[in-house]
Amino acid sequence: MSDPLVLIPARLAATRLPEKPLADIAGAPMIVHVWRRAIEAGIGPVVVCTDTAEIVQAVEAVGGLAVMTRPDHPSGSDRLAEALEVIDPEGRHDVVVNVQGDLPTIDPAAIAAAVAPLADRAVDIATLCAVITRPEERTEPSVVKLIGSQIAPGRLRALYFTRATAPYGDGPLLHHIGLYAYRRRALERFVSLPPSPLELREKLEQLRALEAGMRIDAVVVDDVPLGVDTPHDLDRARAILAARRLN
Image 1 (tube, rainbow, N blue to C red):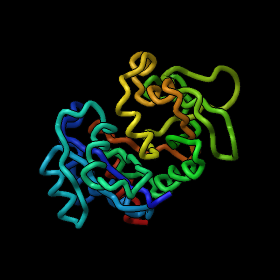
Image 2: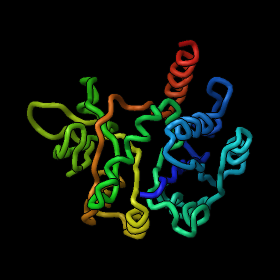
Image 3: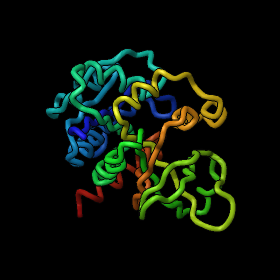
Image 4: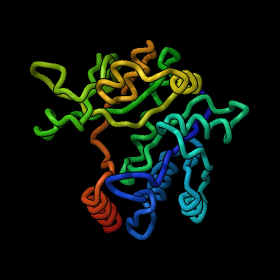
């Protein structure tokens, strides 16, 4: 593999927490914290992809790179595909890591871990998961479960993703973490495909790849990073990062 390229999609049009990429956390916009975690992962260049000039300005103010993309993309994956052609039209980077722009507390080591399965040429996409430890999350539809077959310690081949409580029976359940590392040609193929029946039914984009026969492997990490979607989540993120600064 060549050095991965880390792309962070970010837009202001969130309904539950308006303008959340620019929300202040410990004196810096949230998108800057995500950019810093990606830089700390140390796996390759990091670029924020957005449709908003204010986000570009916030990233560039701390020395980061950001590019403008169209405002009408249906998903972050589509935004990444456009940005990739702007940033790297020569195709020097054959791996693209998609880090969501609302994960200011993510462990940089988890970002780095997502790339490892792509050393196997049979893998198209790599992602992350963690064992569910809170009982209420086992039945919560907002917690996406990964069903997979173990192929090595701490690594699985994904067979399905669902909002249901699955698989049935005794044993751990895995919380899927929506961070992806794509082989470049896999990303290009993925965004060219129409939404699939199971994707539309479960409202889970990654099922499009599985239905198309693409292989997704997952690395098991220690915990689930906090995704900031509500004012309460924002307060939690502020508390987490404030505590880290004190320790």
